[in-house]
Length: 148
Image (cartoon, rainbow, N blue to C red; front, side):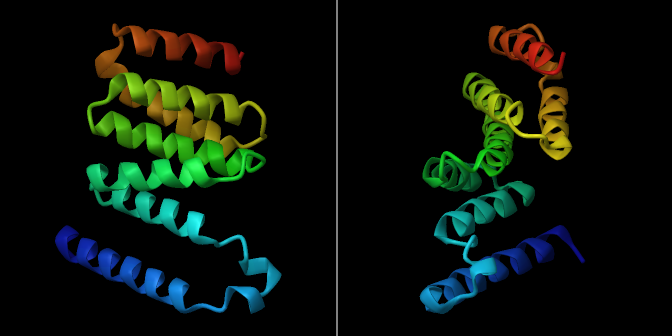
């Protein structure tokens, strides 16, 4: 399967998911599926687009999902902040990406999630080309403090 074909399939799946979500009877949905609300649909759509390399389209969706997420959803917010930071970095917004990654780091220190810590460290590897930039230096200091 080509990347282009996979991208087309992904876009069709996103459209189907949105259509099904809009038709769903959310009031009678079982409790176990209610976590999948419109905010989750928005942020997951953004993450899917980011994975396709469509970072410009992904960024506002992930940012909106993060903005809407309940403050008590620390693990989800940390995970989504990581995706937003990665997307911002790929869009060339180094300062903003480091600021968002710092938020992810703050949230990650409040939850026990090796997956999120791995994402933060992966993000850090993508900063190598900018190692001498002030936002990167500040993020690295914060990261060292958080993981010490």
